[in-house]
Structures are given as C-alpha cells and as structure tokens.
Image 1 (cartoon, rainbow, N blue to C red):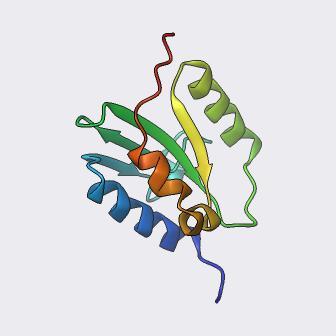
Image 2: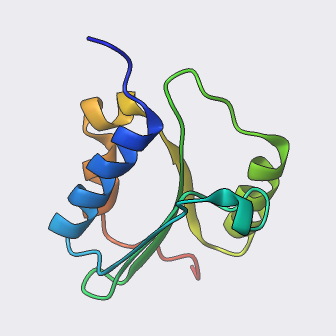
Amino acid sequence: MPPMSERKLQSAVLKLAGFHGYEVRYHTKDSRGSQAGFPDLVLASKKRGKLLFRELKSDSGRLRPEQKVVLEVLAACGQDVGVWRPADLLSGRIVAELRAAPTDYLK
C-alpha cells in the first residue's frame, strides 16, 4: 500500500471528527495566510466539551521548529495538542483521542 499523504489523512480525520460530534473543524487550506507553525486542525465539540489542536504529518514528516514552539505554548496554556500521522489512523489512536473525555487541566 502506498504511503498516505497528509491531504488524505486530513480528509479522513475531518470525516471522523464530524462523525464524533466535532462541530468546528477548522483546517488550514493555505498556510501562507496563517501564523507560522499554527496547527493544521482545530477541532471543537460542545457535546464533548473538548478543543483539540492537531498537526498532521506523513509517517516520515518532521515538525518544523516553529510548529514545535506553537504546540509547546498551547500545551503550556492547558490545551490538548498533538501530532497525528497515518499510522495513528490505522492504530485507532485518532478515534480514541476524539472519543476520550476532556482532560481536566485545572486539577
């Protein structure tokens, strides 16, 4: 099977997010208009009380330094951040994270 592109991964993730009740599924179509390093996806679910920031990468893709900084800052602010790859789709990790209860960062 050929490697899955980030574009195909994004399409699959957006469909899964909608299926799991994420009403807001912002995705960067053209990153030239966005702040350098901002994550590819922002997923929000009122029903689940969750907000997820996710960067999508191919299985061999690497985070750029500015992407690492933005994810670190968001995490320091108590946000749920991460990197998803095609292997995470196949392993079930993406669905598990979409379905998980929100993390209580205030404890």
